[in-house]
Amino acid sequence: MAAGCVLLLAACASQGPPRPPRIERPESVTDLAVAQIGRALELSFTPPALATDGERLSKPLEIEIFRSVTPPGQKTVDALGAGRPWRTLLGSDLGRFARGQKIIYPSLLPEPEFSRSLGSTFAFTVRGLTRGFPHRPTTGEASKTVEAVLLDVSGPVEGLTVQPTEHALELRWQPPSRTLSGGAPADLAGYRVYKSQTGKPDSFRLLGETASAAYQDPDFQFKNTYFYKVRAVFQRDGQVAESEDSEAVKITPLDTFPPAPPAGLTGLYTVGQVELIWTANTEPDLAGYNVYRRDDGGPPHRVSRTLVSTPIFHDSSVALGHAYGYEVTAADLAGNESRPSAEVQIQVQ
Image (cartoon, rainbow, N blue to C red):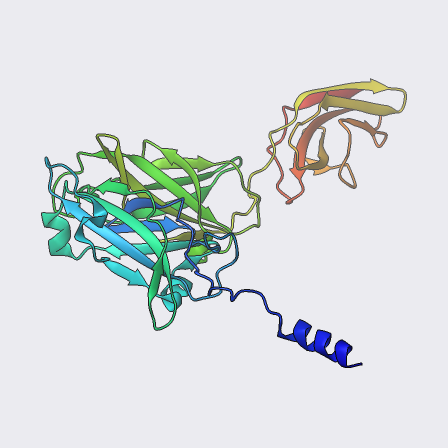
């Protein structure tokens, strides 16, 4: 009994070596990018969710942003060279600038700084950190450095309009006449068109690019609502920048476009009836056809009680000794009716 108690006490007292506190060093940011939009240099990146030990971070993450500005014609200064971060984003900041899984941080340059910095190279590097006790930082490795040469872009594109056609929505706008510094837009390279189905600020997606101040979007449906924005694109020596967004334009296109007039109408009188045949229309929203008749040169009236689904019609309400003129129209699902076909004359004898 005594020996058993001694063994139990010995087992309870046996402990492994003390475990050191976990060091939560954030992984490096791997997708840092920078883009100029108007007077802003917009940084985008995915914040690290794991520490370098492969485990999830449990402490609040902070992001340090390092920046350098190098005048034109000089060797680019290392963004980490200053030693101290240019900006630090705390946990609350990361939530405020979150766009889905990414952080989008716009660095807006005041007008005087923008004008005097044109042509300068802005270099950025970021790194994550957590804080232990007593508020001591544990920093991760710095990301790669990204650079942007500041271009003299224009203000927002003006005069954006959207008009529906049968097969596309046509966008047009006014080309910019001045840059933000007041000069001619010598570096204007084209435009980017953005589209949304909700109009919410973060819902616009790049639809396409165009060299002229016009764009056609064939990917639409009548009665659906769409929103569009346009940015002017500037380019110099491989560096690309955009203007700020134009005002968003909303459109809910309606189908007011009739089908084409039916073609190839021919007719023949057989025993007791007139037989009509024509070439079928190919519109995807075709609903059917209307058949009209003129009696002995009188005004046309419809002889088909309902829409005719096939390009064939039999008219048995004719009488011997009379002349008839026939026309056919096409109708679509929206109720639009085409112009009449060429008339065919039938003499009933």
